[in-house]
Image (cartoon, rainbow, N blue to C red):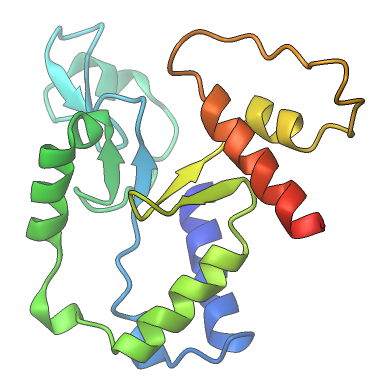
Length: 180
């Protein structure tokens, strides 16, 4: 529910602070993404698969154990799980299936929203060659924002291949360039 509340708050910020018309805001797809969580789990009571964040199916013994009122759930498809993010192709298929012609947003409004989010994307680096944004992890942000040091004394940056050392270095170069 916290994610839903945050998305609705953000919707209101776009409407009130940035004066985005409600008719355009209603075209925005709202979802909660769980890139490390599977969409199904094996129920310990009935040993069958259940959907995460959905009602427990009738007939499952676990449903009778709960004495609390049943929570309200978002409709199926609101949450996006790791299976959708496993490959670029799978994500592309999901997004193409999800986008509807009647939800096409005015290009000027889309550009305005994109600019709002780009400016607030703290910890993001725009990679010019591939024309894409790269998100920096907390350790990368800390390294990028570390205090200046004597260039005669090299700074050792440990990390396995693929952990983002080069991206962090590029972010630092970008920061130094902007600061000068």
